[in-house]
Length: 346
Ligand code: UDP
Image 1 (cartoon, rainbow, N blue to C red):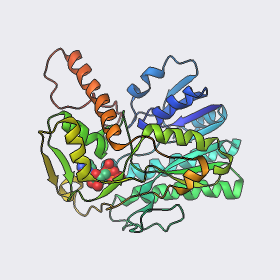
Image 2 (image 1 turned 135 degrees about the horizontal axis):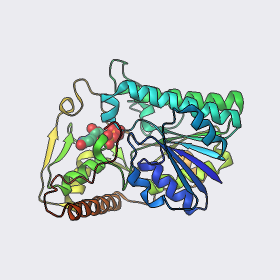
Image 3 (image 1 turned 60 degrees about the horizontal axis):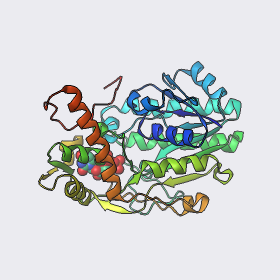
């Protein structure tokens, strides 16, 4: 099969490209590099079944042409990270809604299958955990910009379901829960790469709030395996699936695990939410998926444990760090960051 991955040079998109190529598919990537990185697909550039276009999904004639020449679309292009959502609400709303609208419009014209990657954020701050796909969604007020992400992704889901119900377009929706692994950057606020970066740089690790909030982390390798399986599963059409691990960890436990595995001598610093995200930020205390539906559909069960994930991320970042130091030819590189992702808009 030939697949288009929008946002294919991002963290998850590039791992999905790896997987689809391994499975013998042909892969076409479109990415405008706003948050994706050319580094993520560098190793694929000479692959005979890989092609990429550096452009925006909002370039409609191009998008129409790309969709025309594939069998299906994995739509991953979206604004990533709470930091960016809070800082750039206009871009969040426009990108998330408009890009999905265009993908569905052109896939709809040609009857091409679309897998939409949505997010656990759509559950909002519902206290009813674990979250099941049919649960009610509970959001904060529109005056708090973080909610723009949840609302915009929920609109994407409504739109995709409407194309399925009214036009028979084959669509699948996945709600991703805290996907982590190599190539993810902490630049947009994600906790695990930030903690690993901080530990590699000699600390301290910054825990927001009291650290009792919980998340479930899933390795990107497990996630991309499921995405590829769902795309080829006839039973998945018109359905929504939670995708992630259901094993909860507090953020403080995560900080301690990262510290123990990378550098036991460093400190943990508590940072107030207002300081981290600005005044009036709502954080979710728990965010755990009910994974019964995806398990039933494709037998999904994550293989990576959290300690393996931390080691994998640390190894990848450590390699980035040492090659950067080697290139610089001195010990002057002290921030502990991997070379920053190429980002057209910072
Ligand atoms: N977090 C933290 N320190 C950081 C970055 C994030 O304690 O340096 C916390 C954040 O407040 C949240 C959790 O880690 O409670 C997960 O944050 P992330 O942005 O990775 O994902 P999300 O909040 O979207 O689940």
